[in-house]
Image (cartoon, rainbow, N blue to C red; front, top):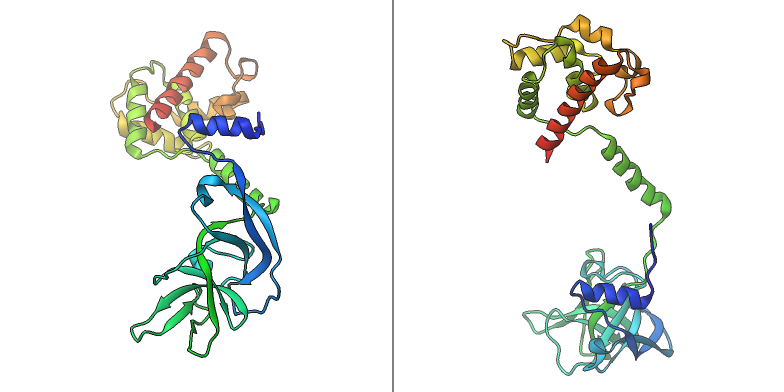
Length: 286
């Protein structure tokens, strides 16, 4: 059952697991215009509104939020449509991501000074070039980016289905066992088999798991002989093929006494051989 929690329920559950959820109850100025992460673009007058954030995030800040545009900062984790929280600062360090105004145009870039003392605004996408800040430029640093807030993502349902179908395929694939694991199971079952025909139960599980091919009784018999060559009741290919009718021809989970080629206690002897084999393989796979 899927339950969508209320805000109070979600907070209580997060707190139970040692997390620290916070209410978004503190309004922060938000300039609802895109600030370029690509080439500088004149955006005109800024229009201010407010967006709520947790008090602990902004309590000691003197800043604002705005929206990023373009992909030049994608390698820094800022993509088109993100909201950036910007704090005012009196001092810049190499590597600070800033919201800047250059000659009346606003943009988001990384600030850096080279070995010659030249200041640059640097993108984080190799498809863009760094911008030198020359003396004749009219440049203002509006603040440094301290947080990136991404809009609620929603993925195309068709894209999700590709992953779902692959997961289903993996779930239905037989588990893989090493030859050593298979030999150990055959050796363990050898002490339980008192009638050669009962090896069919062992075969059925090995076929279900893909260890031997469907109806490949020759390969199954060879595996058993290879592990316990001196066993008094080795399987015979002819007997295995004769039993391969009714529900015995189907995966073990589909066996029923009504559709089995043998009845009563005889059916239970095959069933128990198969069940014991299945248990041994499951135990060995853990």
